[in-house]
Length: 356
Image (cartoon, rainbow, N blue to C red; front, side, top):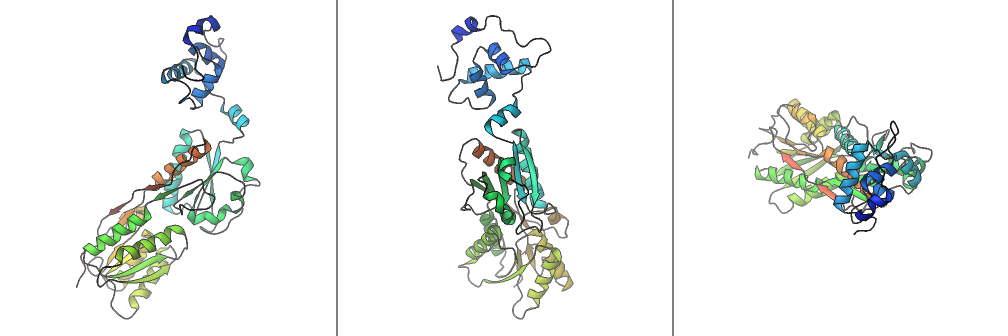
């Protein structure tokens, strides 16, 4: 018999007249214990999902069955008060006008609801960079924090509160993070490079984000590594803010430079790729006949442009879901391992064989 489990031979001796709660009364854990023939401690273990290794599967199912038949629901407020929990977590991301983070939010909320947790959304006011602590005392009002590297500076005061922190799309070595959850950014850029090299491209423009965060540094390193060692490859880098207009201007500037024009533009984001495609049209170039263009993220924009954009699809909702699961694990005293979610290249109409 496992620890915390009742001796079934003694059930009738303890509660011979147990038949459930009084008519009209709300069922309690004591009622469930009587109906299932176990102790209240066992009910607490089962209903709190802490029974594995302490109570048998058969006993756990008996408790759940009794709870369902009696309409019992745990008093989460009392339990949280006892444990000092608020059942509220904070999600810190750039503005939700960024479609990727809107999808991350969807994934976070979906898993949070499964665990009875509320999500407070805090947007870094400038998209990236410093922001004030959104709470007078974060540690007193929150159980934990999820944050993107693109809004990491908004964590200032919160980080000092000792709250569990899960970082999304961030350096796995992030100091103070209990866990990190990332799409496999490096593999995405390797897939882009392999695709374009296979099409015969050797002259590249890397249209890079001017935001100095881990996720964009990884893109640059992975691209350089993937192209290194291939004969005849040249790469020029032009940086730009993440807007269509800035992508357009940076592309026009790069294509106006003397020397051999690139045959392919590798963009850090779909928004920059849309700007690159506009610049090509303004300069009388045809995509992909004269110039191939790739994006990164697979936003709705990728299929709104014509031709549709070849890009790397990042599993944004899965990032949010995995991040929330990691935070729940930390709150339960478990240590989740860093997780890299697979990405895939979606080949569409903006890439073709290079003209020699």
